Length: 242
Image: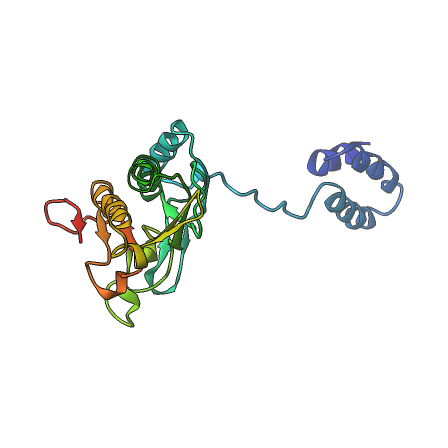
């Protein structure tokens, strides 16, 4: 009985193990240790349970948590994404995926929270009213060319990494109106007077919200889209807007 108590104090886990100990004490002591140990591991969960995924709140900086809290107060639905690093220095840190902010938008992947916050504000307070003012219709969809893309600026083989490489940029290409019209940056920038006024208002408004704004007047590579990112390109911290 004394041996039984010692073994239980060392290996006790469940009632099932206790009963097995009592039976095995009638056999040889060495056989008992071998068989009881195997039985105990099988009954008490010897295989380590996989770690559960962490919530986004446990993987983000304080600034990102504050940004996400602010998005929630604005009724923006989103999902926090895990931090990831890629070859070549690309990474997605403190990023989210926008799920619903009032206007369906294509190709939105990982975005830094500040970029997502400014983008949703731009869609709500610039795109929506400008469409009604200049085009007399509601925007029902925004088309983009995406957010995260592990590449250099302008897709070059060398040079500095683009802000897309850090999920800190989004390229906007077109707007779908409720009446079926599609206003693209490529065609509308030099399209009808209404289309030009609409797109130029959006470009000007973006310059107040994003660190860098590039459009068709910047270079040929941006003839078909607006590029928005949160990088401050000027030494005094103001936006670079072209």
